[in-house]
Length: 220
Image (cartoon, rainbow, N blue to C red; front, top):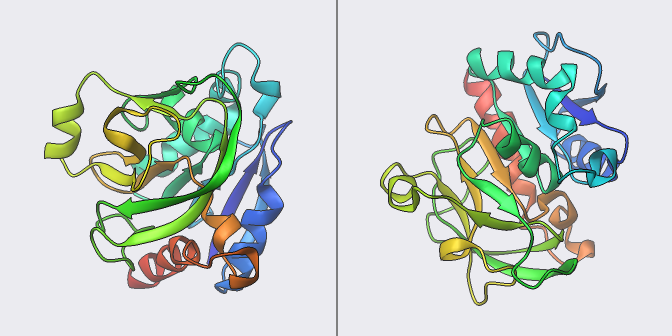
């Protein structure tokens, strides 16, 4: 199963994601920003980093690259798409998930381990967790505060994926730090599951995000 790891100038978590995918038996492949035809892939992950230096705002320039047209086509084909940190910002920028990830309430880069609550298991990425399971993953962002004007609709549609558990380090509405589209196949999370993929890193709670992709593809 071939999983694309999209690279932009400024991406810096691509190798971490590649490694996590190898751990679960996937065939990861680096995809550059200028490749538009992604139809041969089974899934795509947009990793974290600072695409194009976060000029204008995080994800704004990456959103207008050819590869994102390819991602839109994958969504139409009902293939899984995961955006992590900067990848989440990009997915929100292009409208593939609801809401926005904007400047932290305290406008400073925030890098720390956090406890999270899994709020839905209907996405491929969270299907191996239990609803309301508490997990540990790190965050690393300056623009991770989630906001939407349609918060009740988000809850009603079961589109909240992750929620901060014991604190709200960036001021996100309802402590939300991960959302999905209505289908559940497009998921955007600010915490880094790839940085919690092995116990030696401090937690392996994030590896199920990648195992879930494999199980979903195998079922298809």
